[in-house]
Length: 557
Image (cartoon, rainbow, N blue to C red):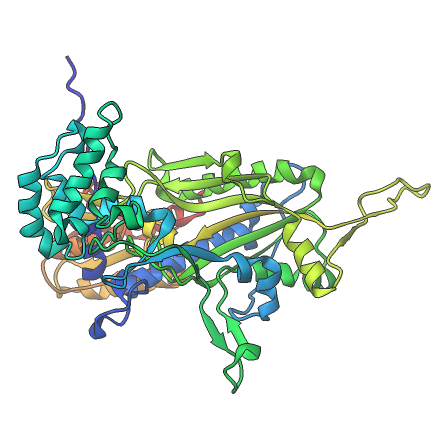
């Protein structure tokens, strides 16, 4: 009988964050001043990891689009780059709909001043509320029973510390009498957890009706109101409404407003795409989960313009290739899924949308969005044409009636758009979570299994001891590797500490290859190659090292 392999323990986000701080991947922004919520800085290794992911995207999307594959129109994919400003004319955001509609429904707590997204309230209560978690240990709603003395004891004890503004804490007898009346009055329809929570948050039932509690202090929340997600600033000396500007909440609109200039100044022909990477800003009320949801973040976006008749085929092409691309960087497996949106999830202008989602430790067993691929119709160009008064249609000489000379009459239309939009910071976070590996059987149990293409340190060269000519050989090999691959990442060399400690340090940094110069090297020109993932060692010729590393770093597509 075969014993099934043990299920690996779920990864700890706390452990991942600790390693990220310890090894210089990610730091809290302004940490020496207590930090600032929703902002993160990248350390030396994190900066290189982020650069390598951005470079991989840039190479595979702009410089060598889709690894040279042909699209559904049997032509190679054509992409050109732009780099547009973070601050645009405010009318851009009026046309795009962000100025009027880019807001979340927020509820303010009168007790502690905390803001809660109205549509996330019950998720936050269920997963993040300390007082509710504590209370549920005293009271199990599923049974429909109310242990009044026990709940009053909680209210007068721990409740005062964790939920000082909760109605149950302030007036326990009154609140519990309301709840008992409800339970006893409708014994065939016992209240669910949500209704019970609203009862224990309500002190004046007949005057206010049932109220919703603050997840932090228990006070009844105010009514929802719109909260703008765009950061505001001013352009110029005068700080008034006429000079108000916004930090962009997405990079896409800069592409749309430069569509005409790109068409007029280049030889692009539909179908073609415009791509850019860059910072965006959203004033998230509750930034959370490390770098997953932050207020300053970087995007990698493509707007692909095509004729309406070909749009669905291009949508399927981009959806499938983007999924394949993420897999090529080491995210293959059960942690990565492609989820097609249901009709009721689609934006009003969208005909189809898919999300590439990753199972982060903080979403497990669920998934979080890594990239969205959306068929946006011609909504954006149409909006900007209407608001700017500038024609943004496209004259396609490959379409229309066939003329006697064999050419086409041409067709003028506003292109439809496929938008693959990826979060660079979320991509880095997914790579960190996927790479983090713990193996207690190893001398150093934590290591990062980065794909060589994105690993911040590509290789390390170590002299076994700092004498007997070994440092000189190590320096020469380090120089050869640096000349060959220095643009793609660091090539490390280090002669201090024991070789085991040097290996462990490289394991935590995610370096895939360590080459050790030892006594045999001086005799037969071979080095010890140590594999990061297995710890196995083998001898290879020193003249083979550059080629071996080059093969591992080559484009996977």
